[in-house]
Image (tube, rainbow, N blue to C red; front, side, top):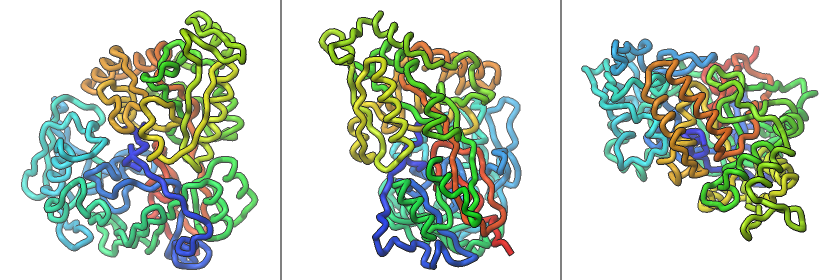
Length: 531
């Protein structure tokens, strides 16, 4: 709900299962025992992107491997120059951002990179005809102009405080992408970029194979071949890692701990902004009732979910902003209080029936809750939520399916969803809560509508004053206590188990989207084989 980032980044994420017995997939790296080579690696991820085109949303938060942005994030999530030679020069009115570009950079097809490619990329994304679900994050951009080949100037409509962080967005070559249809052209599956890797092959639902770019401006990577095996099912991913088919994988806590005694592997824990929540669609007579929503907010036992599902690898979530963040509104924590939840329902006229399930005006307090097939963390959260809801007299029926099955049902049925983006709170909250985005794909999945929240989102987005912005986001979090459209459950840590054969591995603070550009392989181009 990242940019409701279930899709596109990976806003949009589609999954394909990799069967254990599929001969073509049994060794995606082409070697024995994972890659079987010191200069190759095969890792297991849960999701694949819908597209590899930045024009359609791929890599918008950086680490795309195939591309570079003007800026990039370092290990501490601080901005550093990439295709730009330095951080931008910001005008006194905070409406102009000037970037000087690195010279001598070439795309993987050998053609030179220049300012016109930057202008093309941003202009094309902002084109109303381009199907980029995250283009709203660039709403502040009024114009982007090239000043010669080595300078680009962005002019903003209003002083959007986190604009520089949006310029980690990958730059595409105008000479390749411009002649194609942006939404259906071949570029989305056959990209050309300036990044440390080039695409060898993308077998959808199976694997994505990359080769080191020998002419990369940052230096040729030591890992020459890098394969991401798309394995939707958590158990299958763990089995294949244990069997030696993979060199690393993202795993839920209960599976990651099974590798604790394996001296040949290391577990990396990444702190995140990644939350799990239940969407409560406004169009559902039960889930859309404010009293029901408030009662569920109190009925869920978040601490128990952290202890039993995450095994301590996370913390309770009371909204999109994790506790401990400088943007978190103190006092908005909600304690588990089943008795109060029941009183709220009683007062609102939801009375228990003969079977203990509540009813009001002939409507039974029941609704379905969908979760993504093969995702054990979502399944466990969904089952725990349903169990807690039943104690309050609300019947929640859990069902699993692919996103293709779930998406058409989102306006009426609840979904065990996820979201979260590090950095500025605008990146996640706007797409999650803005009423005008209701029904826009995976944005605002609950069709949440709150005028006070809408105003605060706009005030925070359009102000360059940190005090004003903090006050606005505090208002939003307090409104979510009084008028929740989602039941936030947990913020989860991401756990990765990797063969201990390389130096240089680390993790960043991660968004909801994980696996493709996050994890210890966020900087795979800097890895070196252990001697």
